[in-house]
Length: 240
Image (cartoon, rainbow, N blue to C red; front, side, top):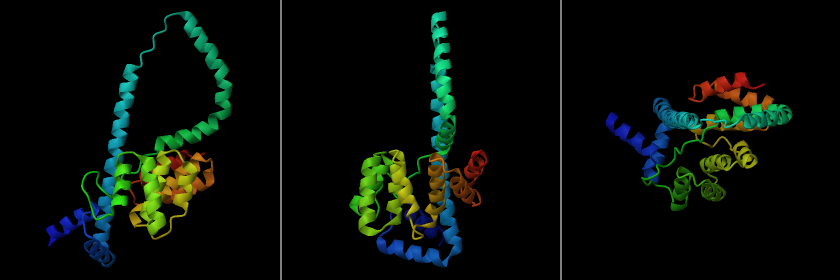
């Protein structure tokens, strides 16, 4: 029985259940808090592992970049020119430092949200258009993904599609669109997306220099048991 349940959970996570099987499983989730908690835990592991891999890749690329960067001043004139340039740009830097600080905090804590709905290779029970949308998201074709996901949301009211459309908009640096989509998501979205929604809203508010509301969202995430809670607590302490 346990092995059957393990297989059922894996198929649900990988979107390999038929509509009938999916409906039966979700009904069971509502009746079994322990099963629901187990599913949430597995989703968080998937998110954490993806984010950690991206962090490790960034560290490797940064190290390689530092190793390749070997400045060689060929003459004292170049050094003098640099000194002049630095002095001229300092004023501009000072005037924009607060904005830069906000943006740096945003960039330091922003991570692309992983695709939890469909593997990049295996098919599932989604309709073709939605499968193409998530495949485009997985392949970082964010414009195509956003258009298809919005199309699905407008036709079905699917809040998950709306959430991923917002994530695609963030990747496209369409921050106002991303904020509008996330802000209008209602409580019908699955629980696994509720805390990440608050996290990304907080980041967008921070980027927009709305520190008070950003701190409110980030603090809300920090008080959860979600995998993002640690990052949220760290960020909360850094927001001016």
